[in-house]
Image (cartoon, rainbow, N blue to C red; front, side, top):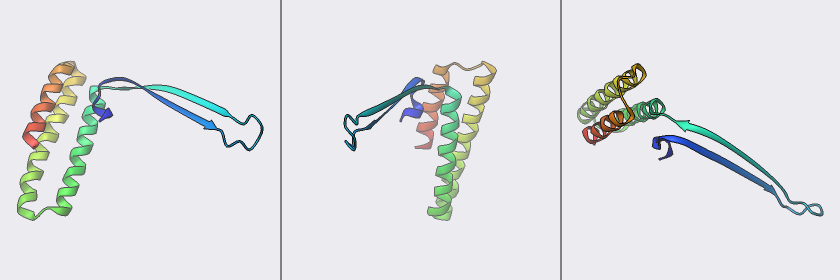
Length: 109
């Protein structure tokens, strides 16, 4: 998933009008832009996905089981929010955050 691919990414959009409705009708426009995926953006995406998962569970899972799952997801949300805070304070490097994500993934699954 590209949102979890840390670094600078290129987006290239190429549009061609070649419907031959006029002589030599072959116009091409190319737009290129760049964007960066940063650790905070990755963490915000994880929080979004965890929230979506909680909503799905609330709507589709039987009461006793949903409480256990929601509890685990809520714990993971707290850990991600702590990681965001620590990253902004300069206390975590990217490798430390990656280790946290791996542990969270294992804990949720």
